[in-house]
Amino acid sequence: MKQLLMWLVAGLLCASARAEVIETPVKLPDNLGSGYLYVNDDYDTPGQAVIVVHEWWGLNDYARSRARMLAEKGYVSLAVDMYGNGKVATHPKDAKAFMDAAMAEPDLMNARFDAARKLLLKQQQVNPKQIYAIGYCFGGGIVLQQARRGLDLAGVASFHGSLGTDHPAGPGDIKARILAAVGQDDPTIPADQVRGFVAEMLNAGVDVQLLSFPGVKHAFTNPKADELGKRFSLPLAYDAHADQASWAALLAFIGPRKR
Image 1 (spheres, helix red, strand yellow):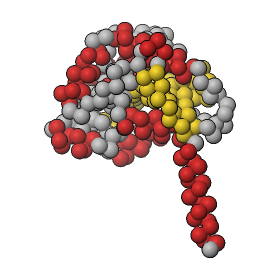
Image 2 (cartoon, one colour; image 1 turned 120 degrees about the vertical axis):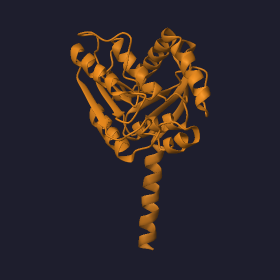
Image 3 (cartoon, one colour; image 1 turned 45 degrees about the vertical axis):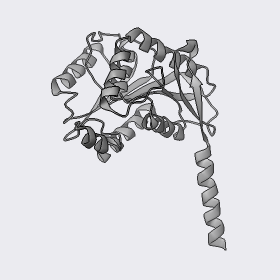
Image 4 (cartoon, one colour; image 1 turned 60 degrees about the vertical axis):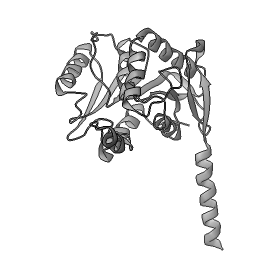
């Protein structure tokens, strides 16, 4: 009976921990789109917040799961739909079409990101000086572009996202600290692009961290990458070590959440 009681208490504690994270569908200011806000009610004081930008597939369950994982650590997180229309692709042809349409309107994407930041600033658990942005694949390139815009962000992290740009940052242009994680066998991020990125960041005087994983392909943080890679003959593969190491680096980059 005593052991059964202990199991019941442990189960209730686990359920309580899960219940601390509240997911709320939200509309971005100025009718610029939508997203999902994640708040951990166990944290009262203002602290770090994170904007999460999805892969080229759109704002699907994977992007939302990453936002939830951040909220479980105490951070307020916002998974934002950068396509602005709720579309989620299941085929690369559609994903590319969605991405190309978004990239063709950079001013609209910038406005959408600004609206997401504005929404976070309205949350009482958010410290205005501790807003971060992270992105995966398509989203990784987007958040780096926001840093290059000189936005007042505490930090930006890109996971298997494009590092290239037509408008390199100059000295003093970037305010945010930068973390980038790439796979060395990712053909979408060739070695010369990585070298150019590092040179750009050093020239701009940025506090930058680069994680480069040997033998690792594109989308290495997504557990469904192997399945998608085989189905569509794409250079995608999940890598548990790279995923876990880059996630640990991200948490250290943001810093522990204080209650």
